Structure formats: structure tokens, C-alpha cells
Length: 449
Ligand code: HEM
Image (cartoon, rainbow, N blue to C red; front, side, top):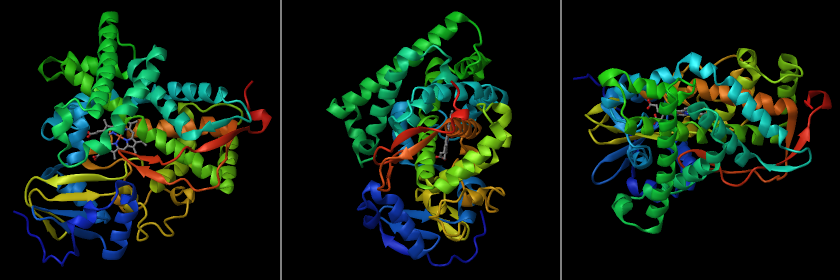
């Protein structure tokens, strides 16, 4: 038993207020709730309560101190239709076993070895942009991030499959808002059009992953990619993975590892286009650190301003912007009791815009991160925390930083639209419209011929 101090009253609202919110306006709605009612608010339903929490110390309880008292929410359960029982979707205590098996795949050495793939893929994409041409930054970033993670995962021989993987992932993600509707699981086994589309997309992905596994097995050698490492865990005696588990982990890495980073890269160039002074500061920094060459792994620690920029973008537009936990037992966050089966919702978007931690929170200002990270651990948590901390965090920082440096060293992406682009919150924090830009070469001296 734990001793909980006297609990102060929690502002309580009817749950229907939350249910009535369209998903698209949820970030602004939750931010308003926190501003109006404070760090913890209860939405009451006849069958349970749901709490919205926007406080670093309370988040620390949810993610770390009392993490064992919670499991993931319904969104994760619905994702398992696509991802099966992979690292993202597995529940405790099984999750711990998955984490141990997958951890070697994300060993520093393996991830560092991906730096070349990251820079090379970005360089090829930028080379295909003719100066003066119009590009859609969000689409380019999505294709780039998919190419990077798929190449890191499967190895190099992917050209024919890339479009198929991209399309199948898009189709399956597009069904997610429907999958989140109450009782939508009834339709999982009924062949209505949306179920058929989802099943076809999942079959395509299964086909590619199982074929890749067969090819790896036939070649009989570790080709240095992440799938080889996953398959090596398979041969690790009783604790190893079977083929279905390898498939689940591989698809999880593909999905979790590309939308998130792609959105962060797209928002970076969107913001740079609207803040020429910050873009100029970035260019000066790149000129100093890189001169006329593309970045390498060794440059990553030197690219301090790129790190600060990428951190600030993920503060303002956190790719994973909301998550939920369900209490497995009666527990508490700080002094507030949470009953078994109650839900706790937290939002990176809201906490990253909380003026208690971030003065002038709507101002885009990478300088906030130049001198380091904030003191309070959960004032900033784009990669979650505790035992479910993003396993790809190192990969994501490296990819984001190397891609931004490789692109910004060579070109400017000049915005073609003056209207601000709103976010479209889905599984990730995507832009709601295309981000169009004109490609402009930087100083010719920087452009490799
Ligand atoms: C900017 C990029 C990224 C962001 C913001 C991000 C964010 C997150 C967050 C917030 C979680 C925890 C979710 C929760 O607690 O419910 C998570 C988990 C995860 N992420 Fe990422 N992620 C990013 C990139 C990546 C990459 C590149 C990979 C793989 C290559 C990856 C693989 C995973 C996996 C496998 C998990 C599940 C970990 C577990 O539960 O043990 N992520 N990510």
C-alpha cells in the first residue's frame, strides 16, 4: 500500500465534452483545458474516469515511478491489428522479453553504421530536385524517411518494393481514425470496403517482410542490416523469436520509424521557410562545421545548432503528440488517486506548450535548446519515457540531424504559400495540407556538381 497525502479536489467535467471534440481539434482543446483548469482534469463517464495530465512531476509518476501500475491505452490495442504483438504493442510482462530481444538491433554500433545510408539517401533525393522546381516537402520527407528506415532494416535491394511499402503503410494508417471509433472492432472480420483495403495492405506488407526473411535466410550471412540482427535473435535458443514475432518487430520498426521522423523533418523546413533569420543562423553554422562537404557520423556531435533546431521543432510539433495509459490497479499520480481501469491521457503537444516550462511557448526559438535540455525531465518528452521510451531515439536524432544538414547545406526550400499550415493530428502529427516550396540552390560553391 502507498501513503497518499490529502488529495486536493480535481476539476471535473462531463466526459461528453471530450467525446464531442473532433479529433482534428483535440490538441487545441486539451491545451485550452490545461490552461483553464490546471495540471490535472477529470472527465467523468458513468463507467470510469479519464484524467488529462499536464505536469512534469505527474508525468514522471505515470512513466517511471508508477509505470508498473499502468498499461497502454486503446489506440495501441487497435494498432496491433497491423503490428501484431511487436515491441510497440506488447503488454507487460511480455514487453520486457521483447525489449531484451530487440535491444541488440538498436545497439549504438548498428545505428551508427546507418549514418551513411541516411546521408546517401538524402543526397540522392536533393540531387533529383532541379533548382526552380516546386516540391512538396511533406511528401519528400515521408519518402526519404521510409527509404532510410527500410534500407536500414532490410538492406539495399529495395527499389521495386519501396512504393508498395509506402502505399500499404499509408492505406493502413488511413484506416486508423475509423479503427478508433467505439465498437469498430466488430467490423474487423466483416468484409466492408475499409476492412478489405486494410487486409490487402497488410497482406502486401506481410508478403514483403516474409520474402525478405526468406532471402536473408537463404544468403546465410549477417548483411549488417537490422533484419539480420532480428533474425540472429531468433536463433538464440528458447528465448529467441519465431517468424511471426520477427515479422511483427520488423513491421513495427518500419511504421514507428518513418512517419515520426518524416513529420519532424517536414515541419523543420516549414518553420525554416517562415523564419529566415533562423535559417540564416543554420546556414552559417553548417558552413562553419561542414564547409563544402556533406555530413558524416563524426560530425553529429559538432552539429549543435542542428540538434537544437530539431529539438525545438519536436517541441512545437511533437511527432508522437498524445498517449494514453490505463490503470491496472488503484494507483496515484502525485497526490491524486487513480482508480483501477481509469485512463490517464498525456500530450507531448500540450506539455511542450505549457508556459510554466516554456516562456512564450508559441515562439519558434531553437536557442532554447542551445544551452541544453530543460531541468524538469518530463517538460520535454518527444520520445516518451520509462520502460516504453522510444527504442529508435538515437536513430531518429541521427537521421533528423543528418538529413537536415545534408539538405540545408545544398538548397533553400522557399515557401510558396503564405497561409500557415495547420497540424492534422492522427497517429502522428502530420501537416494538414501539402507544404509546397521552390528549390533554390544555395551559394553555388556549396552545390556539388
Ligand atoms: C522523431 C522520431 C520519433 C519519435 C518522436 C518517436 C516517438 C516515440 C514515442 C513517444 C514512443 C513511446 C510511445 C508510448 O509510450 O506509447 C515510441 C516508441 C517506439 N518507437 Fe519511436 N519515435 C521516433 C522514431 C523512431 C524510430 C526511427 C524507430 C525505429 C527505427 C522507432 C521505434 C519505436 C519503437 C519500436 C517503439 C516501441 C518501444 C517500446 O514500447 O519498447 N521510433 N517512439
